[in-house]
Length: 382
Image (cartoon, rainbow, N blue to C red):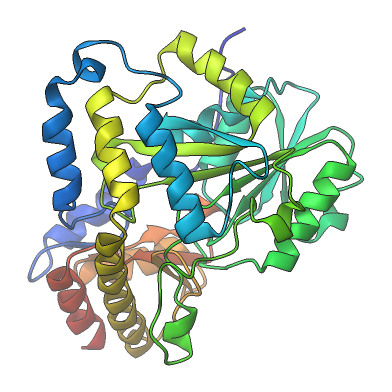
């Protein structure tokens, strides 16, 4: 039957008029809407890409499942940053062409259909719902997926989306809450889909006045104390877009239940969802270059701190997020679009909360340059 139709308020063309207003403001527009990285790609990544430019994996067809070196690098990264031993929990991996396609195709590759239900947070990344719609399945939005009573007894539940740290709110789930989701999902034969793309971007130390260590990351759904030593029924998604500024490289992966990964890999091979060979080499380098991750982590921590202080000065009630790269605030007017209009007059563009299921809120991204964040802070403080 092919893809089903979808509908979503997540349409960036809807902010075009606000951008025109912002561009006309004194000093021009400062775009804090889209979370697109602006910092350099690590030298290690660029060198690896160049070295691999004429490898057999470049002029020949690359492996869907990833090169042996890439697969080893993913396993090393899980061990070094997530306290996860993939082999011990019988987990497999498959690279994806960015994490967005992994999210959007997930319900389809899991063969969900019209009688199936996919649970997701009410306030969340819009592609969870779009991917469910594309498969022809039904989305069930709940306030908190860790409140398993809100979905455990609903007929037809086949999967549960978890996002920690959360885009857009920055919320981070504890290991105990994640373990509760995994246990409840297993009871009803549902799959846990854990989007952990911001896993190394946690700021609890910044809140407590201590230094943050990105290698002391947020709890992973594949950690032994969360999944009880087995990857069965659990899939984790991760991307190098934020940790290594590789959004344009389209480097991400899915890890978890080996039977589910095997099935998805077979379909991915047939539809050509394969990372180019040289990019696989670059991805392996990015996963291993943890010093560059620490540098990027420090940049984002500083920008978030500046942005939070400036938004407070402007009148928003907000604090440093627990994780991710955004400041999530309740609109001063009570309506995101009204606040968008006022902010555009001083040249600042945020993301309307309606995109994420909360029209009373706005999201400000810290993925702008230091100069842009400083300039935005000056305007907000006037």
